[in-house]
Length: 133
Image (cartoon, rainbow, N blue to C red):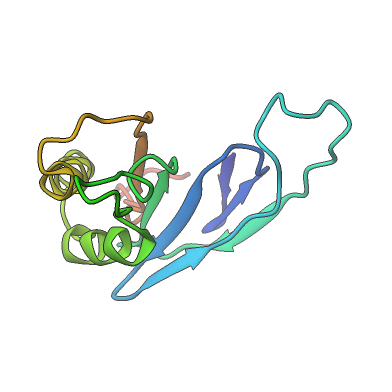
């Protein structure tokens, strides 16, 4: 992945769900199979325009598939709602908010799957007076 002129290019290939938030949350479904699953799969390059203030959340299926004591999954709508409530916070705080939401949902039930979050914030490009870029 790399950032280029406000655009983000990514080769999908991991079992993850992507969301991009400005004031709204948008789920971005990317084609692909998990890395290492197939040696013959041709991954496509995906590109997204990003603006300062955008927040990108990459997560495994562990939180949405987290079960409570009634065997009900946390689900993607609840995951999205948690992200929407915390998307303007610092990345560490967003991760903590999502994790706590899953813990509350589980009602003490042990975690059965890995839960992974990666949060990135798009910052405005800073210019230093008298210095060229």
